[in-house]
Image (cartoon, rainbow, N blue to C red; front, side, top):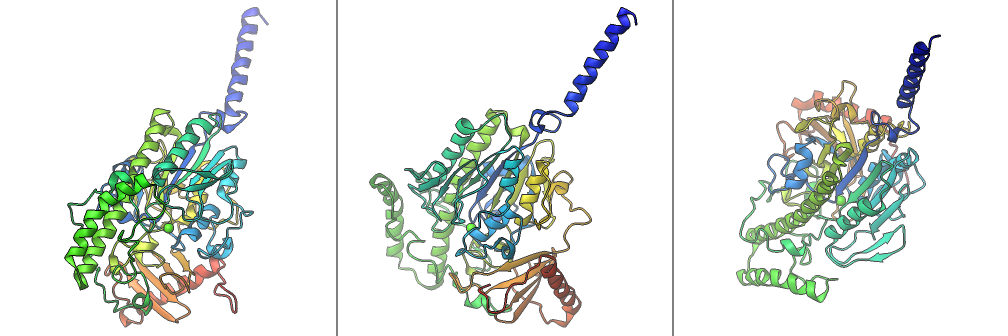
Length: 511
Ligand code: CA
């Protein structure tokens, strides 16, 4: 071999070795072609899709949250499988229904030894953190760092439980949760690893206490009332009439800010009273009764609720800006969602729990540059049950058989349409009864148009045709015109109960 050939051979070998090193890097995080994405999971508590301006018909403006939709995908049919705080969070973490993850209602305690997606990401080399509202009673597991509210947590001056011991903070909770999340990103994050940050707000949960900046926002405007504010609950099963979540009857003086708030510093209280004092005086002088009083309550409620969301939106903007500034945006999958939907006066209600649309449905916005086409909209029926598998799939981590959802990746990386083998219908099961707001236990199934609901302790059924009756005012269960649909939905319900192995209610058991 001549010297020239020898040199050529040598450089070819070096080139090949280089290439093979590139094709099989020591860790996927080092490899720009298979780089694992960071995951920023933003979850608010009780944030209705009706109060996010990325959704058509919204009543307010949320410019920062909307960025995620503009630069990513908006899901019009994202749902939860059990519409209440703790249970929804347990489903999100485990990718399993309540009857299998064991967290049925807000009196449950999360079995933290079970498999969750943060644990699997952690094993796959992710640095994981959980900040804000946790609400699962047992301490977080699967997180390298956690800093969470005790239970519901207050709107002001929260005490937090952290992986470094308990801590006390002074200020507005929505701002504080963001400060902690940003501090973790800036000072505790290991830049050599991909991260999972669960950044979870307490707001806009009841009793809707706004931050100091927004106490007087909306003072001079009136919000439109929902068409069904004075619903008389005919045309449905008995539960709709017998609930205890009416703005007219259930909303109390603390909710309405007619009482002095607890837990504020003297300085905070001064600011608070300067805002609510004059408003409350005007209310007393007006001496409202009947429908006029309900209308006033609705306005007070909706304004405070939206003021809380203004703080959430502002703080989401702070975090998105930080990702931009640090060059993290391109490789970060950002999700904005809530633990369920909420009634903003529809049917005369506040709160959640029902399989009716406003509480069953939840906002879901996903941004992932290079993977999700900006400004896309999906009408696929997806659920919080799918979150865990979606994050694992995005990180290239194998999905365990025991998870019961579906990865949304084909929807996200496509044009928003569901793949052919997507779920035929979504199964739902709510348990917390007897309990606050008196919503009967029910399970049901929704196929994107029809919704069948069974209140099994009352042996009452409902069937809604969402295309003809989007507000779910008239059940067509038992209507001969819907006999075929009803039979098909009843079969689907049984099929889903089998598929998801739901054997509740169990004879003689609590659930
Ligand atoms: Ca909630």
